[in-house]
Length: 376
Image 1 (cartoon, rainbow, N blue to C red):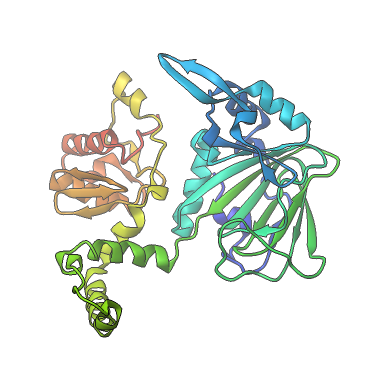
Image 2: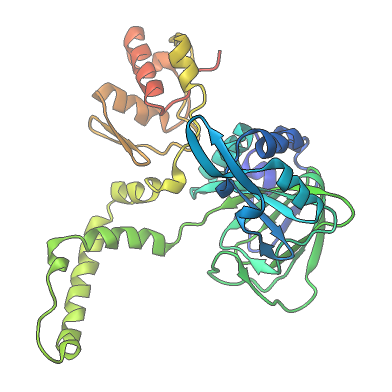
């Protein structure tokens, strides 16, 4: 599997554009045209998973959905493949959102990049007809890594980076910018806040955008402050009477100082870990092989190598493992094995002194979904 360095080199995040032609030998191994076809036309895709954009406007989902029934549930937001294809032929760009959840190889790449950058990572796929221009010049709140998967696309990038940008902010940069034409296998890193304009020319295009969904200090501090403000101290009512604002204003500094002191005390290393990695964006949706292992009862042996699933960031305590929003009460031996696995894959037999006990520990970690079943 490709690494972050394979895609963008050793300098990340760079505050300049990085263009690397031909560094992905076979982009179809990540997401092929056949993969995109299956997602669009054969997966029962629902409207939240796709946007259809034409001439800078996102079309209402009613333009490309139809009522459908799966089992006994009536659904009215199922994507109609015929309508989608017709809109594409009429010049619309298709945006498959967080499609890595449906494409295992792309998902694995996202989780590999996520491990290296420490921020949540996901991916969109953009399918554009010839001559398409989906969005106006804008900048993103994420660093994005673009992999051209099929056809060609022109990216015009502007140097006047917007500091601390909001997502999708439309901007009016000065100058002509620098234009890069991406062909299959090319990679382009667009830094967070760099304005850009994307167009197709004579050929259709499929490109993958891997987004590093940058966590900010506001994200981290907001979580701590929200928890602290739930305490009884801050639930006390403001005083009653006339001139309330004037009476309260001198007291604000007092409460703010208390909050700052409590925040400093609360932000221990385990608490910061939990505040960051329990975010939904870090959730590991793919637990491939878990059901097959349960159904077939494939044995785990002492010589098998086992590892944490990509994207799993466990916080290990005494008889306790917390991963994302899940907490498991486990024997100390299982917790210790999970701690060992945070440093990388190990042989099952190394998880305990007794081979039989080691196998039981590995089986427990697999059943909890923290580890992938060993590959035969």
